[in-house]
Length: 449
Image 1 (cartoon, rainbow, N blue to C red):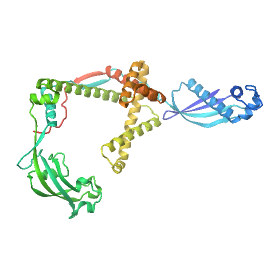
Image 2 (image 1 turned 90 degrees about the vertical axis):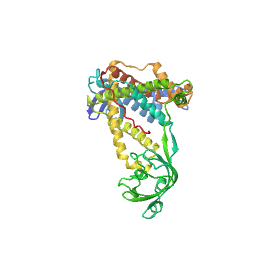
Image 3 (image 1 turned 60 degrees about the vertical axis):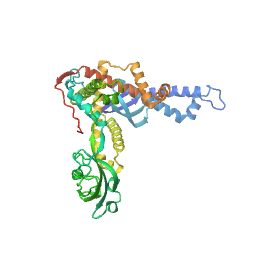
């Protein structure tokens, strides 16, 4: 068998294979013999049909089987001889060419795994903030707990920032109800009855609207002009000025509950005290920062692997991963309320981000696979079983039924691959060179009095 492999850019190769005539004849005779033993033709006893009759009667089937065997064996030999790591056979060119001397030749385009020298992967430098939990941190989280239990009480005074006001309003454009000029205007820009608004001038409902509500009192009416920006969400209203006729029916002040034993019991049950509540909050803050520290370790290790080496990556794999990520981004955007029209406006941005992420992810995964091979990292049967049981629990299916379904597809092997990458990443994180830095202040907004 004559084999020549032509390597090309982008992890491609073309294997040119020529099978000598005597080998072709041998394979063909074996296939004809097999057919003769299996077929049943009228006038002949089972297994006694002459090979010449079988060869003529099943010429197309024999030819197809012969070509499949020759291609498969030729590729197997090419891969073995050249030490190729083939990810996929993309196509078979000059397919199944029978030469005059009865030899057989073909060319196959292959997608190869990238070849590269592993960078230094032990002792990757990682900077992580030292974990400390202060009384101020605990007070901060307790404040948010109290905010979630806050109440709103009517007050007989002018509204101020951070108050809640109950408003009714109608919207006009050029002296007419806005929906007459812009039929598809959102409901909140038409007419609203008795809706609560938190007057937070940093997160405005409409440009300058909350600021204009400062000082309004119960029963007051007010006409507010709002100049909309050129990038406003409703295209027909961009750069236009709308007028809101507003009536205020209530002004309410937020009241936070005091941090008392009664509050602690309301949060954690009869056995909870302020002291034990503070202890639980301390541990919650610590766990949150440990998780953030672990995620930071992951990000720094993966970034180091990505930046330390360059190599070609099969474009088909990047495209497949980019498509998966694009679909996920689009789905999340629509779940958050983005409409189809708005989604299409951001299509190029979404595809670009997905492609960049895909390229980075695929590259790092190839490196992790090489590290796993070099370090002989494996996935235990116990780990795989636990992961499958967890998947079954999330799916709501009985474990046996879930496993039966999983064995029909590629779920188990895909999960094993994911676990292997995770085990390898954990190995790299365990071997990272950690430098501790001063604790970071958590960036959390605090609202309320």
